[in-house]
Length: 160
Image (cartoon, rainbow, N blue to C red; front, side, top):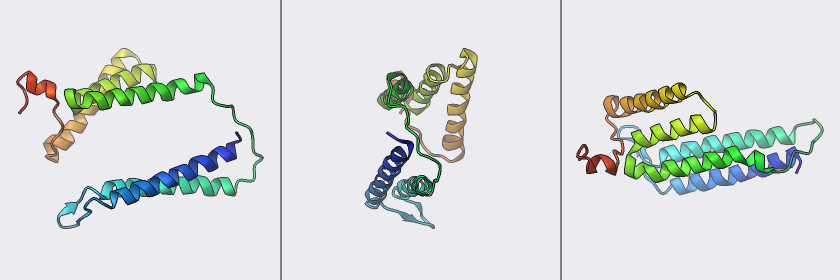
């Protein structure tokens, strides 16, 4: 597959995805400026960003005058990182309900930094403790947005 063909397939696929997300989000309430944004605003915003990025790739590919080149076909070694990321993301989604967002985020960031980026142990621990803690502090303490606490905390007697 050539690079240009890959760009065409990718950008058109992302445009289709963006349109589907946009019209799916249209079923949710949008809210008002006075009441605050509803559940449909953010997916629509993400869909617009995806569409903009896809259109920019498509337009750049159409007007690109450089000679097209053949890209390496999918090789097993090229699929290791995306497969590891996908498995890590699935693990995060599975552990979100039992462990809660804070602990699942810690595990996701720690394992991801060790497996995907080969980060040193102390850096992985530091980043995976600080980042979820800061996000928790901003959303829970400052903005009063409740975080999913997880079933493990209720079993241990810490959650309500």
